[in-house]
Image 1 (tube, rainbow, N blue to C red):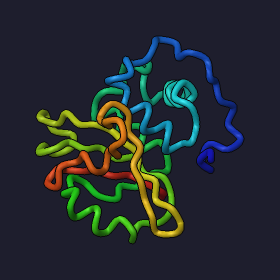
Image 2: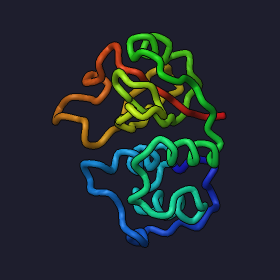
Image 3: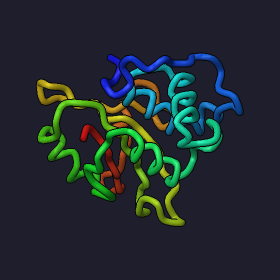
Length: 158
């Protein structure tokens, strides 16, 4: 399902000009791809065309994430919340797709922040799941791999 905010927008699925990060470091592009409901190339091209990043290589830092969530109609849901607490209140969030970042023990957007981006998909029936790339192990969801005390920051439907 393509996110409503980009319905009617002409998408470019070709390889992004300027390239992209390698798969194992491309979690930001992949998480935004899940949030938007489009392919990774189209996602990177959209973010570049809107001027939020110069190219796909730039999708590696918290500043780029903040520019993108500000440009998309995504509201901050929580900043640096413990995963154990966020899981408990996940069913209270509105149905939709959320961009999330796991910064482990560090705070988001600080010099020590070196996180992993992922998407949270909250279903209308109350269920939810995560989608991530390089942090998943075969047969194990990313949600079960997150440490209970890890700091999670989330942006979602406004």
